[in-house]
Image (cartoon, rainbow, N blue to C red; front, top):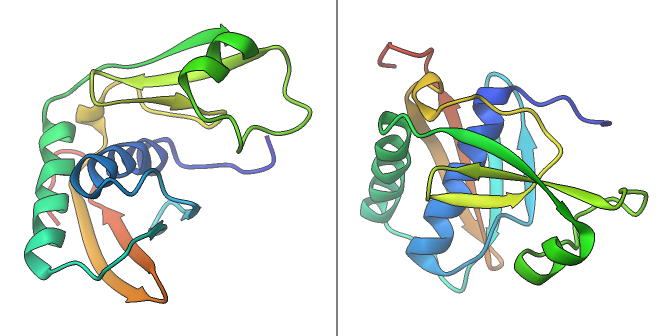
Length: 150
C-alpha cells in the first residue's frame, strides 16, 4: 500500500462519503487527501450547499460515530465485488480477492486502507471549511481525540 492513512481519519472519510451520497446523491468523493491532523474530500455537485446543509452533514457523521458501529472486513472474489461495487479505483495489480470494509449498515465499499474497529473510537468530526467551484464541493475536516470535544 503506497499511502499510509490514519485509521480514524480514513474511517471518518468512509462515513462522510456515505452521508454525502445519501444526502445529495453525489456518490463517493472522487478525490481525497487524508492526513492525521486534517483531511479533505472533493465531490462532484451541481450546486453549492448551504451552511445548514453543512451542519446537517456534520451532525449526521457524528451521529454515526456516536452509534459505535462495528467496522468489519470481508473478502469477495473480484467477480462478486464487481456485481455489487464500483471497482474503478482498484489498482490494476489487485489480486483476485477484493477487501470490502463495512461500517454497520451505513457504508460498505472496497478499500485497502486501515480502519478503526468501531466508530466510537473516531472522536468528534468537525467540518472546518468548505468551498464550491466549477462543480466541485471541497469539504475540509478534522477530528478531535476520542472522548473530547473540540
